[in-house]
Amino acid sequence: MSNPKSNARKAAVQALYQWQMTGQSLSLIEQYFIDQQFFVDEPNVHKNFFTTLFHGVPKDLIAIDALLSEFVDREVDAIDPVERAILRLGAFELIHCSDTPYKVIINESIDLAKYFGADGSHRYVNGILDKAAQKQRAEEIQRKQKVKE
Image 1 (spheres, rainbow, N blue to C red):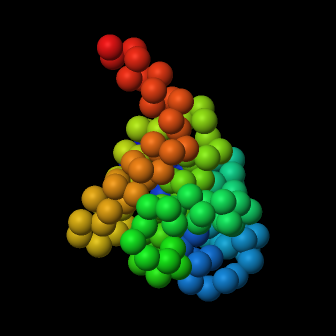
Image 2 (tube, helix red, strand yellow):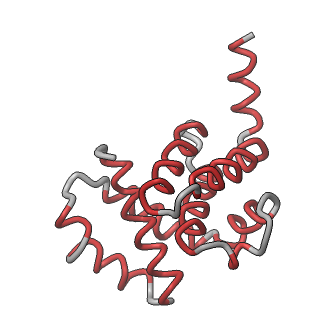
């Protein structure tokens, strides 16, 4: 993952994981990532996109978890914290980033799961986000299918 938006997603997943595990304030975590950790090591990051993702997930957590809960096999809070951060990020993008094709969101989420998650977690993430996309992006999917016909 070397493009600026992919790097922003990578940072956002790590920041969301930290938020989920510690409950620290978003601004404190964001400042840490910008000043100390990720942006120093990886300067090729779309910082505004990172901020949108990182602040957007907690802001819209109820809708995000409601979408995910339709397709997961347990309570969202019971999902492995790494997978939960990735799923929440992907669901946020499906809901709020209509300029990004759903297949890009799913592929980026799969890459994040391969990078951060346990063996095989990318298949779980793929299955959940694919179902969420079918619901959230139904019109986009239908348009793509009509073009193929």
